Image 1 (cartoon, rainbow, N blue to C red):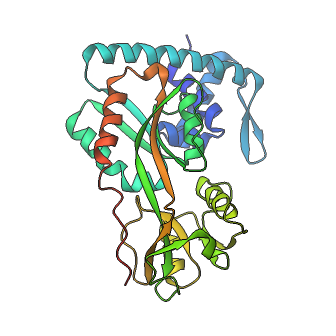
Image 2: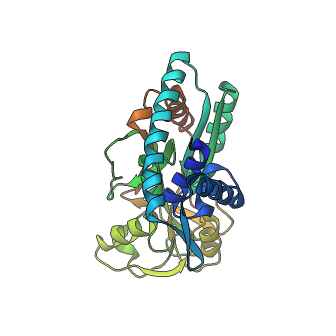
Image 3: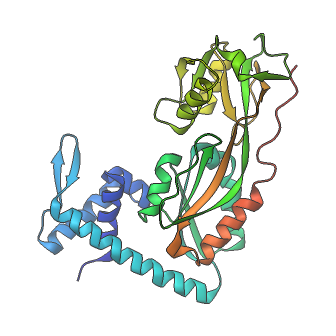
Length: 307
């Protein structure tokens, strides 16, 4: 009989595309995942992975077995959901994916509150970009995701995935203290055509949103510096190297030399919780979504008054 934990490891490798990605999602070491795959190969007497460059690729047989594993895991999930629903209390393991600023600014309080209220619930978080997390939920690699979209770029809603709004996160224009805009109460996007910008790298949700937003104002933004972390962007702004638009959630206190100016109209991103339709009855899902919504107020403070 095939071992379910080994099938789970194969499914995770199939979804995440690598042993390292599967290990992160499952909470294992890469070595442990590799061992699970090797044992599954011996059980099935079938070669499941092959070297490709510096990484690995699944064989055709492994792809078929991973599809079967997905079906089996879905059956197990339905059984676990039914049992948890009958008990009426959140329990078992719950895997949650959250993008960086939500993982920093929202999830610590949510996870702590869930642990306090429901000691039988083993909630585990992984930091995941929002454009990836929705697909991971749909494929069963995550039980729940915290993702976001922007006012001009709605979040895709795959079939079989449900969502609930957590809250709206306003975005501020951040400028160096000595910048000509530092004393303004508000600024329109059309006034920023000559500015040097600091933002996330191409391919990220926030970079794509910034490009589209400023292009609709009639110009191509001059991106001088790219950095994934908000704290790095803030350091570059403080050094007088450009301006940025950064949401408030998870941003923390602005460092000395950085001021927030209201952009008119105010850019806003909306946060969502997403989960599979098959797990919608699970008390752990309902309680986590409720806690996310409870913890939202006050997580996005208003910008300080310009000095």
